[in-house]
Length: 252
Image 1 (cartoon, rainbow, N blue to C red):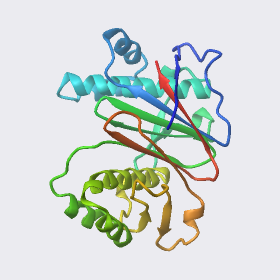
Image 2: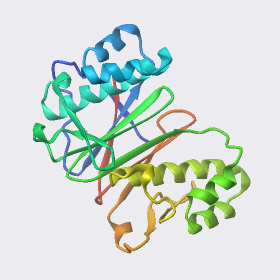
Image 3: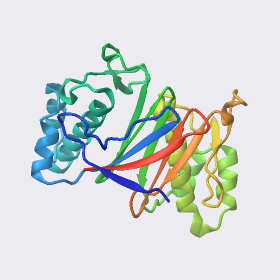
């Protein structure tokens, strides 16, 4: 069970209790998106003009507010890791349309990935390795078996079918978060081939990569971390090296 240390990060720069990021570590930040007006204004002040325009593109206040906190918190934390003013950070898109820090900032060793669901976001940060994180709120799915058949590999489908009916919904979300986090760690996301690799699904089995089509050694290069960030939610963090230590923090 992950322990979450509460850390306050001022916009003016990290204080003495800001965690140092070792090269064998992954830091996972839990970010509450439902905050009060004072906190929203704090995060809004960090946004770029482009981000403020994107914010206004959302139809509902709820989604505008979540975007404000999500992007402001990302800037705040990456600014703390890089030593760059959060409001001055610039982003560019990878060939797969994944946001990355602008190369002009000169911090190529820092890798990060952000995910969110409902009122919660998670940010995974590491050095010198691909990293991905996915978060999902567990809800009933009417066409669960059809979704497994269309998105999971034959080996995953067989494991899913062998599980008791009462375990299948949880197994689906465990598998989905592991698969998406692994694809995101490669900078691909859901544009990748979901059926071209297999992960474990059962809550009783360790989370791991089982095989990748055309790359038999891949399963040895990736480490999976599983966390339960909130009641009714599951998440997976994947990093390209073994071993790695996961440290969990609450942003406040």
